[in-house]
Amino acid sequence: MVSASQRRQAVRYLQLQYKISERRACQLAKLSRSAFRYQHRKPPQTALRERIKEIARTRIRYGYKRIHVLLKREGIHVNKKRIHRLYCLEGLQLRPKRPRRHVSASRRHVQQRPSKTRNEAWAMDFVADQLHNGSKLRLLTIVDTYTRECLAVELGVRLNSGNVVDVLGRIAKDRGLPKRIHCDNGSEFSGRVTDLWAYTNKVTLAFSRPGKPTDNAFIESFNGSFRDECLNCHWFTSLEDAKVKIELWRKDYNETRPHRALNNLTPLEFVAKMVT
Image (tube, rainbow, N blue to C red; front, side, top):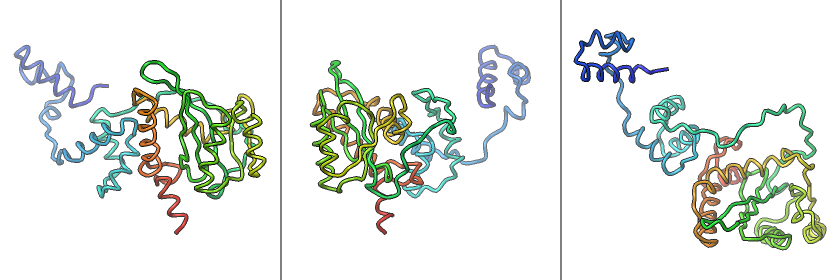
């Protein structure tokens, strides 16, 4: 569908290119003369549009809803529908990077109960990526399923059960141990080293059923955002460069990025609200 503004441009083009009258050009473009002569009376909102574009340039995978939340934090209180309209006029719409699976929720068999407090349950999984020269890169991601905090992103060329235990122990020193950890049946999680650590620290390893990634939906959702907003947006020249960029993104995720499941609060704001 051609918009009215595009039809106006077509009328001007016909007038200049073929030297025809306004009436004839409007007839060809199927636009009334009153609509062609119409002038907007509302302010152009140039400053707001520029700010929306600035946010979209720095956070290229943010949609209009998250941009609206960031504008509210800056003291710009504008209706969400207006932000959506200006967002579309600037041509900033995003295409989903991955197809959505249409699975009936009633057919899912959920065994894990949802966490109700901080540190009750963590979730962890591996993500694969590569450096600019094609060298393989492996990343271990860990999140708190209640506060949605990203507790760690450990990366290396190879990660095994020993690395998993080291990361879990490092996190536990700062915030204590969880009651259970959701993970898949990979050898790094189901091996003897991880099992011994869990048994010693009285932590339950809640394994997903084979072929059922929705059993660990929290980490799957996080990994999707992580790949979409960080891994797909950066070139990593070295392992050290990857560590710096990923840690900056993790800090931004915990401290700045609004989370819809937390009523558009950041994970750390949600934690602070729990304490108060």
